[in-house]
Image 1 (tube, protein in one colour):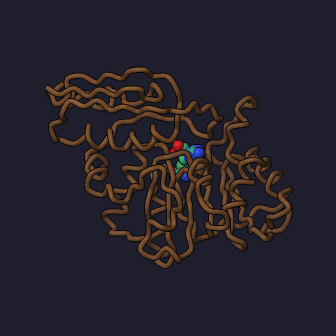
Image 2: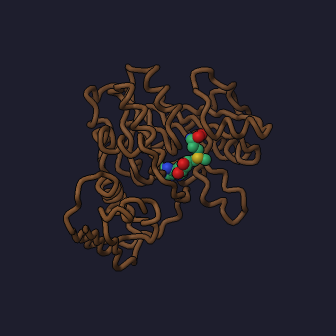
Length: 294
Ligand SMILES: C[S@@+](CC[C@H](N)C(=O)[O-])C[C@H]1O[C@@H](n2cnc3c(N)ncnc32)[C@H](O)[C@@H]1O
């Protein structure tokens, strides 16, 4: 019987024994102990999560291990996501091991350095969900590099499964808060930032969690190359108005559809899971493409 002990882990939600009860039932893991759940450090938590997942999900026998995560800094920033737990299906589970090379380990530094052709234009997608549209875009644009950033583990696993099956060389994914990753990127280094159907955070008290706020847009702009674009899409009308109000008032960005307008839905943007849901509910889709002009 194996025992996995995780010390000084960062937040209560991982590891989540309920996600792998079969392993516990089959005595592959006898016990999972999480000690000292105290602070919310993003960095170490993210770096560690995928590793643990892959280990726990694999059929290898685990040696008892104590993982020490020392020197955690308090991290109390408002985040733009909510973690949702869901079990992995078999292909997702396998994908984490088989195509693990497609997953970058946080911290990653300059995302461009992880590609065979680092000089190619880089697209970063924030919150790709299950990743289907990202994989299709990477497949359709082999002359570009793509990095998808997501915190939803089944989505990451599904995305690497599809990217791995398609033998894509120009796509990498990352389990991290996109904000942290952007901060580590050199300025003027990203050609396109994509934000498709971000959580709309409908309640007023949650508005500060919306990705599109001036402070976060300033970071996005700083990391975009001159002439690079920020492409957002939403099916939530109040968020569309909110986005337009913010983006049209960024002096360094130009609305490619003209001030006050949304961009006609580009046919090269594949329909996403959340977009389909929005359409089924009768929502209008708004795209916005803004170019960095200064
Ligand atoms: C509403 S879903 C949309 C998913 C996908 N783009 C689609 O259209 O189907 C928003 C996703 O963004 C992710 N997300 C939100 N903020 C994020 C952040 N700061 N870093 C990484 N992922 C984030 C969430 O985990 C969630 O999966």
